[in-house]
Image 1: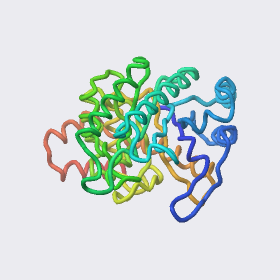
Image 2: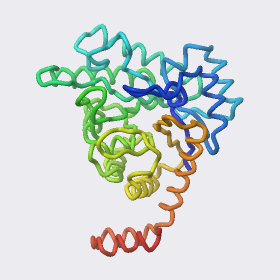
Image 3: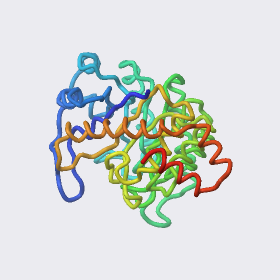
Image 4: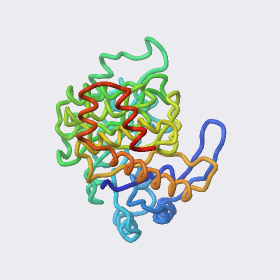
Length: 321
């Protein structure tokens, strides 16, 4: 069974363009909050924010004392005051080198905590307008920078979390296919994908199909859970909107052998109590897993071979409802 983690940022400052819902918390406060959440096994720590307040050794000790593991270290490449036009896709060589050096530091810190996974969502890589960026150069710069980052420690997974847009009108790496092309172009065994179900939904993908696509290429490294309305990445409760897609997604995740790893939550609590919210997040996850587990794999194989949706949907309703 996969362990459950929350991205630490969602236990800190929560706001959108209009309203601030929760003030920021120190990393110590985030750890203390996380250990109150039922069924939560760990955190996905954020770099650099979570690594600036206390020494690395203390951070590791506090996580261990709280009974929390580290699912990944999330390297934030969108920074206020720097890298305005992208980080590893920047047209400025000095900026790309800064990003490479920063990733190396993050990898070393993650390894110091016993974590062998870096996840990053290249949100600010992309453009808002036509003729704003040179796409040929952007892809080449990204590939070269990621190749250097991956070479720093081949035992550490570098996971690219694709997203269609926000804050850019169109992100450079916006779909499962695009992240797969990027991984293949770089050619590093330790470069793969963070598959965020909400990002797949927003990109108008069938999430279970994205699982199959990335798994067949050996690039489905890590999974984020949440939900949305397909129009915007709302980071909602898992399965609260796209119930059937969520069940199929978890069924395929298990079928591909991702069963002894981590699910991490990209979920926003907004105006409600965060411990209460994440208690429900973890509860819903286990409930969704139990529903997916009720599906007989041989029966599903038979139904998908026959390709009669009447029989497939009847089986789903008879089995799960």
